[in-house]
Length: 254
Figure 1 (cartoon, helix red, strand yellow):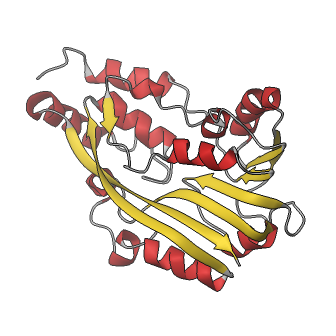
Figure 2 (figure 1 turned 90 degrees about the vertical axis):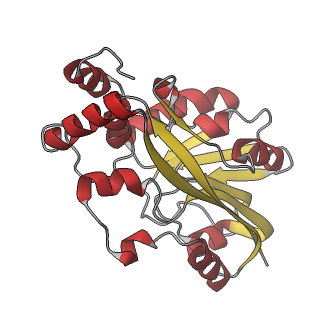
């Protein structure tokens, strides 16, 4: 099962790789993740094709939005991380979409009832009252979100057992309750648990550098003993297996 490559080479390669945007092509052949059954990007594109004014919140590098074949006449995306703002602008401006630099925790810089469709894929946090405010009556919020205890095999390998309140965070039922409290009617809620495999230690390092909330403040130097131990485990036993959780939520403004 050995890869034939040294720990140092694999880690150096992962550290040198760019983590800008939400392009996960670097993982090709090195890690896999089962996809949710509902096909978010395809379903999002279907909704965009029938919208007149759409907002994509926390768009990352604009990768998902830019793949939609048809964009509404008014399409806006927000993003808070400067490198991603530049990447999203390069992808979306040629499509006629506007990218607005906006901190994730700030009020949305738009008027009330400005959009008939709001989308977001894997938002850090969902500000339901702001979403309800910018949606016009009858408008829709459509989102794929990270569920509870996602990839916690990775998290707990490095950080140890997590408190129950951390493990049960991002509960879909809580999201539904918060949406309804903001004046939205939840019309669809689906959940999935998905297998992940890391085939070398470089994939683990790149994952933790890219998805920074998994192990906050992660550095190779701080976790080198654990990384070396995991490298040896992968080399002798095969892929490190974890499970991500996702949920799809769609809500309509009354």
